[in-house]
Length: 385
Image (cartoon, rainbow, N blue to C red; front, side, top):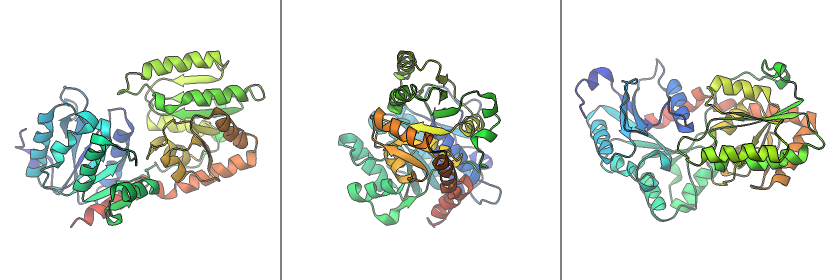
């Protein structure tokens, strides 16, 4: 990889961000993009060096300011390592999720980290006490190599300390960032004024089987005989890295008809901009997150729902248990449609509670704004001196 001219293109000191970025459609791409917009402002002394994970073999012809890291090409990891070590990089900020990188369990990332001669800050988006075998070994090596670790919830920090013997001095809990938004009641939403339904439910994010949407369908099918004037919007395209996502969508479409929900469910099969998604959320009354897995340690969608001031009915995955309080939403067991229905009914049938939850959810995210998150990242970066 040629580095001639990079000193002119990238002014030191640099922070090398290793991640996906837009136009890639994934939560981590969105996360890192929002983080950098707030972190690398005019007064910040650090400049960004973008190391973009590429999921195909084609070069980044339309983003000349980015260095490609080709996911499944071992040589690319060594090339990026050589580049980072030679350039005036102050530190490396790694956004980690196993499927982001090549090799089984994303082991290729270790090719980059093993001989890295710069400080490393790693944001862990997937944490579980139940990692085993090679995945556990890879995870422990990443954690050991990191000078500082960022997690998005207190429970994730506890897992690192209890199951991976990570010192508390190395761990930093920083909430998932959210945009700075005004509070808007559903009735005041421009989009809601065009809708005829009395209640609007919403789920969002890249569609795949782990979303558990079928349990929300089953709950709403039980609700319909007594309360039929609702619409359930499911926002998001199929997950690009899940081959089974298309079959899952087809299954859900058939299930909706089978459960007599054909007139109550609308699929928005596209990757929405943040502005488009916010407009849908503002138009909604209750947000539904029926995830099947209990081990998800972050959720940008949940954070956004709360930042928009909407009560959430969610299954009891790791991140949800950390951020949803009883005055801002309801947590239910996984894969239990009756319990999920009860959570919906509790909020639906008590308008005063619903309004309280809206206000409490919105207030909870006061310190989650991206500018606040960037400031906390910056303190960690500066502490590496």
